[in-house]
Length: 397
Image (cartoon, rainbow, N blue to C red; front, side, top):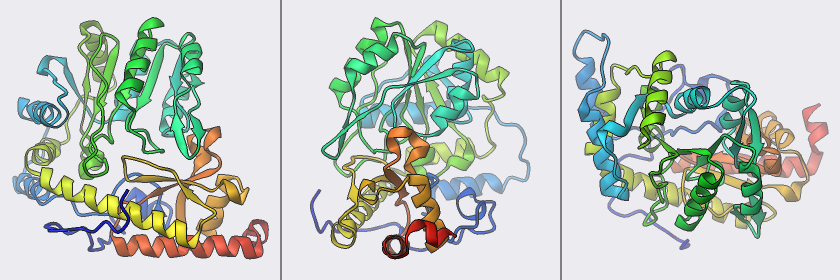
């Protein structure tokens, strides 16, 4: 990454602070923290075409049941084809209210209670819940962390897949922000085919890459299910829209039935308008957003280097979630997170939430205006200074 990266020719407003209090906002209203940087949504205004489309629909005074038109599916198809050369056909796509509800339904229709489902830790904490809540077994392929970078332990993956029915892949990977290489994806597919394991590829963060970097979509295959959504890219998670894609007709039929049984195939009255406006009219906003997020990443990187050099920012290529190595502090991540909340009102996600091998880390959401980010970093530094001065146990007493 180049030091001193600057924004040029800005068109959209990514610097105004939007007060989200008293909107039933999970991030700002749920816990009452002064400064939440945990849950993965953004504190930016949505792209103007999205807001305009939603307002236009809201002007119609009836908000009844809504079906999903081909216009929405075509928006998905055109977006992935033009940006990533990932070609989808309408007949292979299913609508769902979200990626995690989709994964939960897929688990129920393709596995039995007690079956093993593989995930790669540290990874999005809801992967653990969705497996355990459905009475399946979590099988962990721990990612190898060496020299500040993460890699897949393919020997361990091979052995663990022999005991698994499903694998859930995260690409780009949350929380480490890594885009898996084409060679990595091909090797994963090869091992899944070897062990007849169905692979679910969660690609919800795919658009949020550093500028001039593109993610590698997982190839369509007979045992591959891809889950896609614009919710992270365009900050529209509240509209609950996603797609499940598979070319396997048998899997398609089973998933379609399960989504219907689970009542996960219905459409929010504003979802179609929001998604179509996002994919068809908001690409310029997204490109500027990516530059803003990249600049925020550089700000955090330089701050840690200059102000908190004992902490290390893990190298990443995607998402607005940064993974900070705090191992030098020698404090469990939950204790460290609790201390920062108590001491500074700053809520960062403890790494233990993402797996045992995440306990030396904190996850930071940087999708916010620069002034907010600077405030958060100042709080972070003050908290670490106080931690070193008074000690964690004395401060929390």
